[in-house]
Amino acid sequence: MEKRVYNFSPGPAALPLPALEEAQRDLLAMPGAGVSVMEMSHRSKQFTAIIETAEANLRKLLAIPENYHVLFLQGGAQMQFGMVPMNLLRNSGKSADYIVTGTWGKKALAAAKTQGDARAAFDASDTNFNRIPEASELELDPNAAYVHITSNETIQGVQFPTEPDVGDAPLVCDSSSDILGWPVDVSKYGILYACAQKNVGPSGVTVVIIREDLAAESPADLPPMLRYQDLAAGKSLMNTPPTFAIYMVKLVTDWLLREFGDLEKMAEVNRKKSGMLYDVIDGSGGFYLPHAQANCRSIMNVPFRLANADLDAPFLEEAGGVGLAALKGHRSVGGCRASIYNAMPVEGVEALRDFMLDFAKKNA
Image 1 (cartoon, one colour):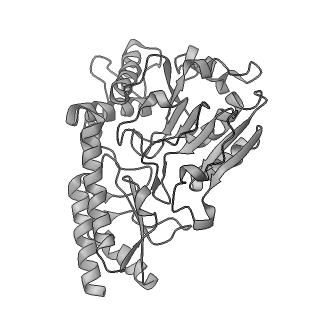
Image 2 (tube, helix red, strand yellow; image 1 turned 45 degrees about the vertical axis):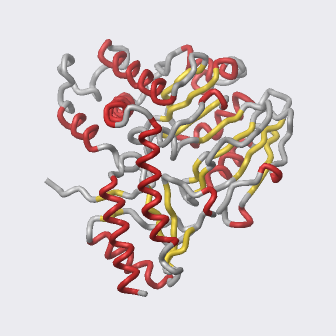
């Protein structure tokens, strides 16, 4: 059997080993079904139990209020970049505000502009997205249809430590790369959405948590598969959903509940993991350079550069040689990036920390 490496990929990302092992064990035939989950009808009682448990697990972990729908959709976060303004902006007669703190927020704003009047209430592009705004920098429209944020920018490693005050406008959040990484007060949001392949499961399914009154505002002239109201009424089963991906969401959330019980305990582990790497970066005497400013550093994605860019290639090659995989940074930031989502064990981060210390000592 091929030896597993420590996978620091930003997505599709590492999955919890117990979840993978359970899926492997039951791949050919689910207990009580006699067929693989990939073969069973999405309307069977076996799959109904799977999707209902996945939703119940998410509701428990995130303490989702009863007046919110939980949807399992397709198309990733980028589909939501379009669906949110289609449903909340297009026929509203209002504009939408976007707080742009990274690449994905920028893409979300561009998609919204195809559907209506959308504007940047803040844009950190002048510093290559290394910070979040001060409250005084937000130029918000008090009558906005909604305000959109990206809670954690995967590429730049910038994370909101708490929700910005956006007044009475619904807060809409792309939470793709930090959902389930720490507790969130869902009641502060109109919509939370996240592609699964970073912290929730494999690629192919997107979780959308939407307040019932906002779903009810969906324009009647949208196709049913793009209307939140119809998708909620159909309980995510209007078409054949990504059954295996939803099954994996169930297994991943089962693991979270079993191993940690709640997200505060998961957050403690995530802060410990990210703290190890930031301590190395900050204590390296300038050998390693962080991207994000200290007050908004992500606990999920740690981008950093080597001061001597000529050492980037040797760093990545040597890291790969000792089982530390997928550390190359995004081209817009350069250098390296360690994505340390929930499924990355502490031991993997310890191995990266020790490698970074050793590499700096040998190459200083």
